[in-house]
Amino acid sequence: MQRMKYLFTLLVLIGTISFGFATLPTTFPVQLEWKSDPIRETDESGLYTTEIWRFTGAIYDEHHPSLPYFFHRIPLDRYSKLSVSITQAVYEPFSKNSAPDDAVLEENIRINTSITRDRDQYFGKIQFIPIRKTGPNTFERLVSCILEINPVPAAPPVPATRGGDPTYTSKLSDGAIYKIAIPKTGVYKIDYNFLVNELQLTPGSFDPRHIQVLGNGGGLLPEPVSDLRYDDLVENAIVVAGEEDGSFDPQDYILFYAQGPHTWSYNNDAFQFQMNVYDLRNYYFLKIGTDTGKRVASQASVSGAYTTTTFDDYLRKEEEKVNLLDKYDLTQGSGRQWMGDYFKNQRSFSYDFNLSNLDNTEPVQMRVRFAGRADAPTTFRVKAAGQTFTSPSISGTVLTNPNATFASIGELNIWTFGAN
Image 1 (tube, rainbow, N blue to C red):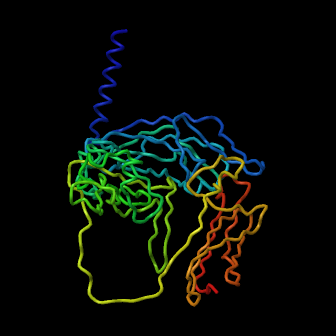
Image 2 (image 1 turned 90 degrees about the vertical axis):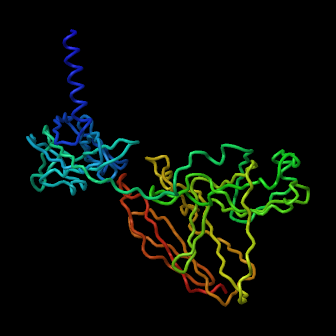
Image 3 (image 1 turned 90 degrees about the horizontal axis):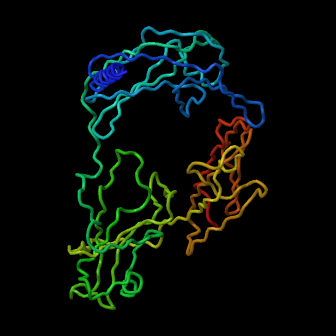
């Protein structure tokens, strides 16, 4: 028994060494244990059936959900490019019904490789579908093989800058900190009463010249890891009226500009709106510490003059009422896509957009989005300013297929009609 323990430990140690320093060509044996029958998923109508073949340890992806993937990960001692080939392969024919996912199958197995980094360790990832096509409707599956893995050392990609050097001491690590919720973009005022009644501060206990406002703007955080983002909270320039005497008196106040949770931008001659799908408020921090706060600097007036009596304005109606997949019997709601009114029993709705002092001689630009779910192409109509506009055709979907697109999005852009 003691000898068997020793041999087992030795084998594990050898295996660890061979894969812990995967810079030379190495091999990995693969033995797949296939299930005798596939899982068959039938939709609620009973008309559409999907076969899902399995083997022990198989994984699946959303792009080809009926096909199993083999996956293996090896540690690398440095960043490398992987060259992987299959040798000594043993295949067996099996009875498989044709499916749309078969479009990715070929005569030879296609191996996908990638390199990832987890903390300070690089890893090589290997995955492939162990099924090959031998004819128009005939297939073979891989039973066993040897993977020959050849890591070739390479220069790692240059990481993108994400906001300068890392911060090791947060601006929130000292001082008195107060979190302020911002519902929309604008200039906000904090007065004596707010400090005393809401924040429970004693004005004579601090120097107003040490007041700081911290925040990184509004809108959603960027999703791509390569996009610029700040490593810590940024101090914003503010106005503190009456701070010169070192005391925050009843007539003193703070002014600061803050951005809300949603953002507007101007692109391609049109305003674009980005809703924050995670929160209805943005947050800034009021800090009272020992450092002198950043203040809005005076600026000389620009030369010249320009006078106008009109400006572009915008309104938006976007009520997050309906989650599309919540209306499907086989799901319970999912995703970030929410819509407004549900055009089912009630087939038309009226919406009012009120702008004061509107110049009726200028055109109005309008953009409408609609989600349609039908087994045939559909359209929707918008009536505005006495005119009727019809959308382009919205693609239909297969209502009985649970894996098909649930609904299609149609968009109507109107640029020329007058408000009167």
